[in-house]
Image 1: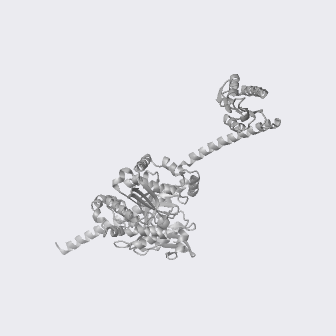
Image 2 (image 1 turned 135 degrees about the vertical axis):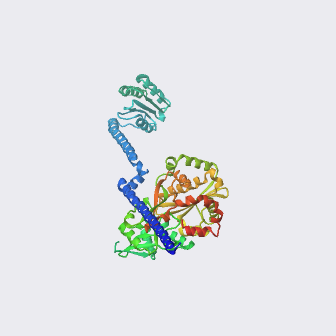
Image 3 (image 1 turned 30 degrees about the vertical axis):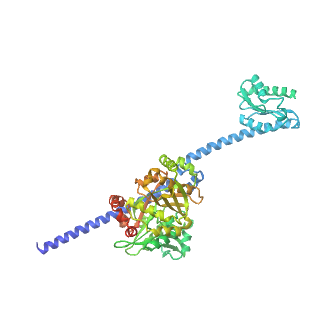
Length: 214
Length: 348
């Protein structure tokens, strides 16, 4: 083989090798720049999609949930707020009721035997029972606490009167006349399921009878 | 490039701290503790850079010069992150262009970044990118018990129950004194299993010394025997789970589930810890499937390179392809005279 042929062959190999090298290098650069550009676009899209990142993160942290659960969590918060607002309105409506009843009564010595009736016209069974949790501690008192909304009543008998009056028996008298059902102990009993329209009058009548027995 | 910006090698550590302290993107690998430990144990030249405007530091970029075959590479070794920390006043693109211009003629600059940092503009500044795996990050600002019930997957909860029934003893935030030898033995056993080179023994000491209280050790024992360990670093509100090791003979009792869950629980209980970062993995790998059980969101990691043609240096998928061979060569790769030197050369 002549030296010219060898020279040409070497040149051809070198040219091919150089071409391959530069072709690969261009490919590497193109791939790398594509990756870099895609990353920039991805982050820009994330920022746009989620708005103000720090604010979103802070809101999610305050709500104790991941950012993607924030809408559902906020909706639940709003529902609960609405429920509580409604409950507050209802309780507010009960307060003047009770205040008026108390102010209309003559002052009574709490240790002297007496009968107390309270009508919570907008009250629930829970409201009546909470009220009765206080009245049960008054030694000389028989208390009737009517929950007008639910048609229930809580009856308490003070410690001094437990030998002569039984809360469970009093509740039985109420349900015998007004329907529904109930039960309890000597000191604390409840009745429910009564037509609210009937309950108040029946309770007043039973209360009056107990007053006469004191 | 902004003529008002000037790059200087780190000489005033107070300036470095001014940038990184309280920065939302700070990681353990931006701290001077990390710099100290790596410089002490490896033959790398620290190449930390501060960018100044009008005498004020506006950006900080960590890095070491690691020797390549034909040129110098500036990168943050052995970690997932090396992104610049920018002050609010700094324009990211101007800073990136300034850092690029600061390179020596044949120096390759590799910046390990992640989608969560939000830094953009690399492509407009001539940086190429290479996908470098993913990490998974779990917010820890809520309640651990809620996370355990609603975020951890069922397989993990079952694994934790199994580990509890096995009667393992758990040490959260253990004192490194006296247990680093055991941890290193476990580290050796783990890397032999994977066929990858080990860190030098002194690196664990250097890290615990440099990080002090911010280095967190979590251990699981079967009696006196250490069966799983996890070394984590706390910085910038993030707990980075850096090194895990375990005894494979105990795997059916899930000690790794337990040691990770302990580190996560501890993070939930600390007010200054907002996120647990599970570290870099290859998506779809066995390790990633393990970390996925904790319900942490995946985040793409990308290494940015200039000149862009060198971005492929950051491609870690090649290691997976070599695993079949490296596992067979594990006794050689992890030989005390070979492993640490190989680790230094690979710097990953």
